[in-house]
Amino acid sequence: MKKIVSCITALIASFLLSFGACADAVTDELVPVLKKGVESYSEYIDVTNIVYKYGWDKDKTVDMLTCAYLYCPELFFANNQIFLYYVPGESYTAKMSYTVPASELAEARRRLDAAAEAAVAGISAGMPDVEKALYVHDYLILNSHYDTTYKGYDAYDCLVSHSAVCQGYSLAYKYILTEYLGIDCTVVYSKSQNHAWNYVKLDGKWYHVDVTNDDALSVYKNASYDNHGFAMHENFIMSDALCRSSSPLHRNWTVVGSYPAASDTSYDNAFWRYVYTPVVTDGSLCYYAVKSDSDAADGTKYTNICSYDFGTGVNKLLARVKARWYARRSASGGSESEYGKASYSRVWMSLAGSGRKLYFNTNKTVFSFDLDTKAVKKLYTLDRGENQIFGLTYSDGAIRVAYRYDITYPEKYITLRLRSAAQTGI
Image 1: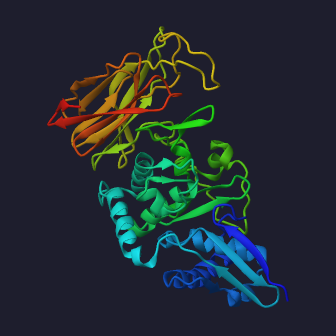
Image 2: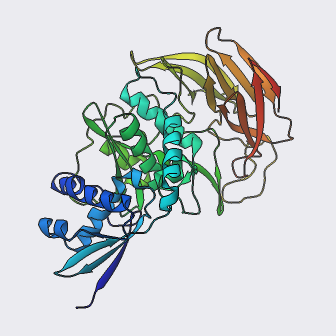
Image 3: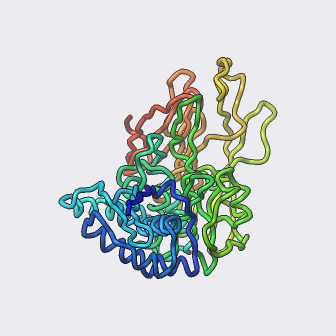
């Protein structure tokens, strides 16, 4: 009998995670078989008995193998492209290949775990799960970028190489939440949208989280640029209804089997929904910046720097900052306008924190904000002609500042070395 071969790829297989009987078959039976085979670097993994036990055809087997792969971010060293060899009425075998040699696996695992530990280092035990999930969401966005070469598909790519597509973001998010924080999380996949995101369980209820879609790029013609220091939150903790309206990537997805309804809308109007800065935490309160509803007559925008207490649900306004970011050319490639003639409707302030200090930017200046005294101090003014500051991050005593003409240009960077509260060098 002629052998029939079908090729599947975890990113593009016809699959969205299903629960119930299919999920039990995957988690209880297929996952252990897949893990055992992958961990021993087997080239061929026989799944015939499971296929016949549940009466799967070749297409269902493809779906379930994809499910099992997405359930196991720790198997990052297995290639996400799996070939299914099957002989109708006889056998079903998954053919595996590996991206990390067996001799290098221990070191790769060490690197992955070190990266995951760094991702949760700022989380305190007293944080509610939703705040922990928010922290990791922002951490991945700030420390990874979308891989426009489409080579990064796993948790290692996202956490260690810092470059991945949606599948890599989703697997990294699941890995951290489940393995390090004890929060139920899985990966869901839309066939019609060719897109992966997460399903997270908080206080017994399921919600959608799309980390990739919140790590927005600026696109000009055929080029895309990272937005350094920004984290959107439109796709964090969504009900089914909000998820379907939040993005074209979520409006129609193909479901295999059934999955729990994400019917709770408690977080649909949460404070973070239209926050484009990272949400910074000091262990008790969190801080964010959001565009004010009122603008000046000359087009100047106002941004509110606020605190939020997850324990009490109280928001407080800490400071109101005015700034205006100027646009030079349209995203469609129109001719450049004179500097100062056109401005963006949104603000491009970013927010970072260390100890009792927050750091933020206007279009030309970097400031510190003392959380105890509420004092604002100017740290640096950009002197690069008509270039503007479009974001910043803080790490290990340094502020990394991104600047460019406008968002249609690639970013350039300046590093501000801080000593105590003063900027002492570039």
